Image 1 (spheres, rainbow, N blue to C red):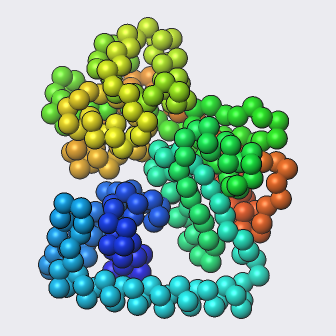
Image 2: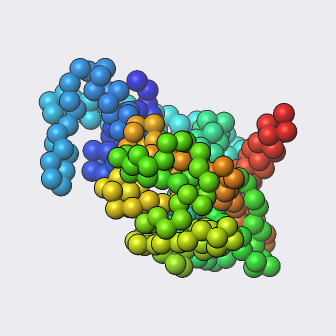
Length: 303
């Protein structure tokens, strides 16, 4: 048990939401659930009971919640004093905008690694649709934006390709038609697909690839959120093509089935920033960290 775990528990009770808790702690919803389970294993009892619209703390949960608040308050005040008195390098909050799927399942890994290296840094991460992320950067409201599938052509913005996400065919847990873990893309021709809405770049990106490979596209549902797509698949409403890192936890917990393509499909991810904006010390450190991570990733591939 550590401070991070106590913070997850505290945030869950404060927000009454697994989704919000995952977002503000830069982890997945399944990671939130796992950390709560670990706490309950430590104390050998339930910490709260989930009611219709709220979480009701048990007696042990009430004690832990009160203690968590006190511990986190002491920790935050200590970090603040250290930052005010000794740290001259970390200045300014890093403001980040991201599309939801990239922010939760890819960017959070970068943020956790950055904060472990620069624990006094402060990062604000908000989720928007693709166009809104770009607008936030253009208007100077955020330092960095993270988008996928297509970059921006604005002359004032720089789009840095930072990663590629492997796309996989995602099916309900009861699906047994495929007897192999790798399939040809032609195998999904005519399948009932649940896709993002038409204005979302990921949708256009996939449709272009499927058309080029002569796959018959049969979109039966449209959604604008990756979490709702996964929920719909789980309830046997259809299939989808999603980034593997977005469904890996669900696959490992047997909540979804995942099939890789024999000829892989990769969705590019870009970091966008305004080349005319002057970065704070913290933002400059984050930029260098991302560039270094990209360099190290390339070196790993070449080994």
